[in-house]
Figure 1 (cartoon, helix red, strand yellow):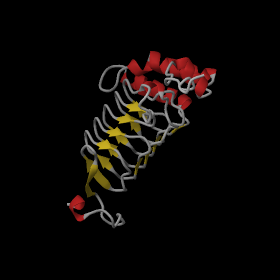
Figure 2 (cartoon, one colour; figure 1 turned 90 degrees about the vertical axis):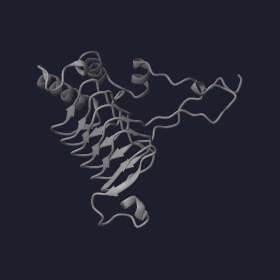
Figure 3 (cartoon, helix red, strand yellow; figure 1 turned 180 degrees about the vertical axis):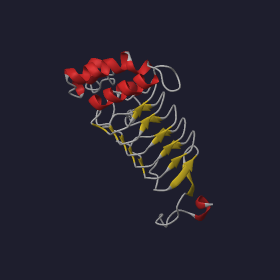
Length: 210
């Protein structure tokens, strides 16, 4: 056996993922209903929106590790197999969002369309074989606190922790942890200012607070 035979490309088929994550028949059925039917049902203000949102939210309660009350799962949102995803009360997953496994979202989180939250990466250390053959390191969970507003097309990278009461500006690429009460934007995202100055880290420079 050569030194590359133990490496395999990441397998993403429904059955390989179900086997990997020990997904039982009921959850697999709910995932099939979601991706085959429910994610395409209409959102407000279109006719049938109430049924679509209610059915998607019910399926999320069957699929996620934890799903709170009064949640909204919007049109064409994707969340992989839903493994270890936790969604708090009064929170939403927006239209066309991609939410990686192991993501934890707190209470009262607002999310605009086309948000991407990543928990997986690819290995790339070796240069003698293609990156697709190098597999993936263990997932790094993303954690989002309570009362967070995530703007459209925000990208949050693996392992990031977003504090409570934060605003992530549209198009921000969040590569590192965000302190509570911060407003951040840009690529890579940086602190623009704080909604509330009391209790912020002393290490934040004065320019960031202007």
